[in-house]
Every structure is written in structure tokens, then in C-alpha cells.
Length: 230
Ligand SMILES: Nc1ncnc2c1ncn2[C@@H]1O[C@H](COP(=O)(O)OP(=O)(O)OP(=O)(O)O)[C@@H](O)[C@H]1O
Image (cartoon, rainbow, N blue to C red):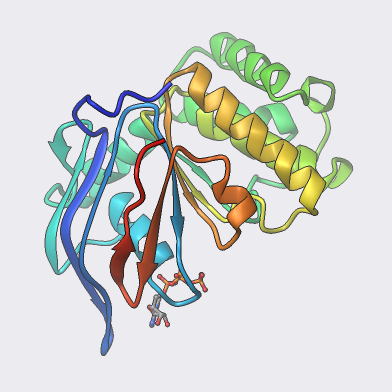
């Protein structure tokens, strides 16, 4: 459940970013409350993915600030940003990006293994998440043996397995048919909500945005409509 009166868990303020000669973001302000689900919308080329990369600390802004869980992210060295990304964020992309050589459960437990958790505890928690996402039966299969919807559920389980503060999802249902996409989205939003994880969801599609608490619209690198919490 979101707490929009609380301090934002993730905030970008006055974000400017140029890539080559393109001024991609022009003074973007964005805030996400703990547990909130926000859809980031806008036409192709409006800067959605670039904004996501800045908020994840993958890119540094030319101006402005990024604050995650109350601490500046953009000013920290690469090593610290990587460590914070692993611990505090979860990611879901259009094409799952799971490791094909690993089984479903091995993929899901990966963030916990990288964080140094006990192997038995990693396995237990990964199985719990797969059960929560209704893909526990596929735990020991390789990616080539599961459907696109099952793989995307596993990607959601992996993104949530280490209790991140925020999930950043870039077109998470873009590779799925409408019905499968809806089911994956429902699973993402409800599992994140169960554990109080905020979600920033990049999408072109209004039906995807319907799952959010609030929409933010970008055009030509600027926020044109920040929506109002329901
Ligand atoms: N690596 C890059 N090199 C050059 N230009 C880039 C690069 N990445 C992004 N851009 C430019 O920045 C602008 C914004 O791109 P971005 O991918 O953030 O938009 P988007 O809203 O996510 O688009 P889409 O919905 O098509 O994914 C575009 O004009 C794009 O051409």
C-alpha cells in the first residue's frame, strides 16, 4: 500500500541530461512514495528510458539530483551506486533478461546470492516468491522450457526477492500478448504491494497505466502532466 504523505523513496529533481547533441531531459522533477505504483508514459523518444537510467544510477545527470531512500545516489562513486542498485532496487525489462543457462529458481535467487545470503535461505525465499507469482511448478525448468508469461513472472519474482525499496520496470509486458500481459502486471503490482515495494512502470499503453496509482507523462524530455493520486 502506498503512503503518499511519507518522504519519497525515490526522487529526481531538476534532472537534465544530454546524450551527444540531443538534450534528452529538460529539468524533470519526479517523486515516488513508498509502496506507490507510478506509470511513466510518453511517446517514443520522449526520454522515459533515459529517466529510468538516471533514477537507477546507471547514468549521471548533467544537472539535478537523484535521491534513493533519503540518500543521494547521483553523487556516489560507481562502486557504491552498483552496490546500492543491487540491494535497494529491482529491475524488470521487456525481455526478462534472465540467465538462460540457469533454471528458473537459480535465476530468482541470484540477487540474494550476490548479496551474500546463505544458499539454503536463498533457495527458500526464491521458492516462496515463485509460489507467490504462481510459477512454483516451473522452478527447476530452464528458460527454454517455459512460456514467455512464465519467464516474465520469474523476472518479477527475481526483482522482488531481496525486498527492494523500488522496482523499475521498462515495458515489462511489452513482449506478451494482452491477456498474459495483464496477468503478469496484476502479479507484479500485487506482489510489490504485499511487501511495500514502490513500482515505477515505463509504458506506452493506457491499459498498463490503469494498474498504477498515478501517471506521469513526458514529452520532449519534460513532464507535461504529473497526474493526481487517486
Ligand atoms: N545511447 C544513445 N545515443 C544517442 N541518442 C540516444 C541514446 N539513448 C537515447 N538517445 C536519444 O534520447 C532520446 C530519448 O530516448 P529514450 O530511449 O530515453 O526515449 P523513450 O521515451 O524511452 O523511447 P521509447 O519509448 O522508444 O523506448 C531519443 O531522442 C533518443 O534518440
